[in-house]
Amino acid sequence: MHSFLMCKPEHFEVSYVINPWMAGNQGRVNTQLAAAQWQQLHDIIAARAEIQLIAPVPGLPDMVFTANGGLITRNHEVIVSSFLHPERQGESPWFRRFFLGRRYREITLENAMVFEGAGDALFDAAGRLWMGSGIRSAAGASDAIARALRIEVTNLTLLDPRWYHLDTAFCPLHNGEVIAYRKAFTADSLRSIERAFGERIIWVSDADAENFACNAVNIRHDIILYRASTALKAALAQRGYTVIEVDVSEFMKSGGSCKCLTLEL
Image 1: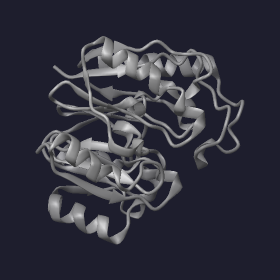
Image 2 (image 1 turned 45 degrees about the vertical axis):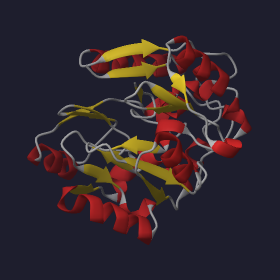
Image 3 (image 1 turned 90 degrees about the vertical axis):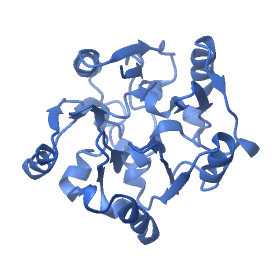
């Protein structure tokens, strides 16, 4: 059974700017609406998977985006995130405490390099790890993770600060397909995606990308996301998937959507 980590948005707000989506949204979060939206996402996922909760911490408004807490392996190992921005660095000890308290074995990367967890590291259906770098996580993190976990890792370089984490522009799916946004990546990275997935790539439009359609939670044949165009829904339906839209507009003000709000355990 799938299992996800979430964090209630008790302290969620936009109180600083560390990505372009946050600009102009400081102090504009409707906290009651955010709580209701988070609960709806929680309940939709809880009907399909197990959910564990990490306690929110005052002063860490982005802790609600648990995807960035660490990278979890199938062997009950964790690489706890080392954040680029000081505003988020205080989250790491709390995520570490959570994982160690549940007997995860912590793997550390050499040179304490910047690595922002499952926001920038995603396993595909075949077990290959895809690593995003260029905006947040260090480019060298992919090689360090490959050595630490003894697995194959493919690095993808992100170009646009609006798509600052890999999971905002790239979503591997249950049956081996991938949803991706072409303009988020360098030419070399696009070639890597095309070699691996070929006709199984579902490229999204600018509008779908801006609605964070790639920032989706995939549980078997259900794809949970903020918004998807008619064309994207049709493309996914042809491959046997059902799209479930969830309003997370308050979290979009901070540059996060459904996948950002979850960490698959």
